[in-house]
Length: 197
Image 1 (cartoon, rainbow, N blue to C red):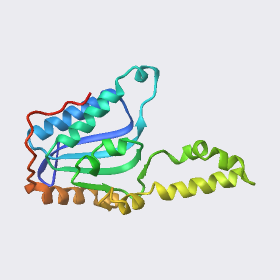
Image 2: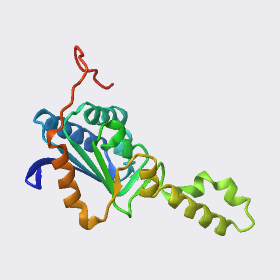
Image 3: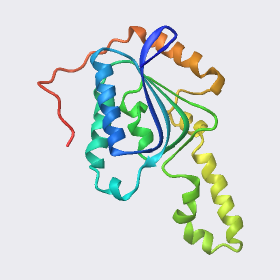
Image 4: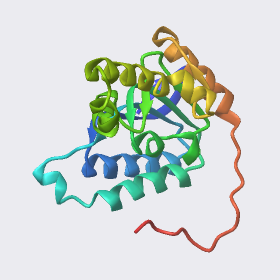
């Protein structure tokens, strides 16, 4: 929990690779913040889910579903900032507009993509292998992929509200929280929640 512009907020920081335990912890925290109408600020720099022998036995699907459910069900103000990498489904799961984030920013160096640029060799392997100059073709494909995963492309697609300079980060988050301070939502009547998995 922190204070930004005099407003108490809950901060979810996702960096490195997300573990099942990390997803569970974030889901509980988002739900707790929502219970007390505390705005949630999510900072994303996540390369994907963790892969290790212990992680393989973890119930990833259930934990990621719970994380998505926590963000989607919360009605409190939600501001998300992609500060680095946001690969795969984690961009969606960690406070995206798809799950109800009110404002989503990214820094110019952010990478928002289904996969990292290093993986293009695997996906476009046949095209690269059959090229006259495989190394030049690989670099050309990587350069093209860099355009696809830029925050400007995500903003054009409606996934971001703005690409901001890191020096403006605190000011822009504070302004977004101030704008959302009077947020009122009306949920449709339902008998009870539908638990994920």
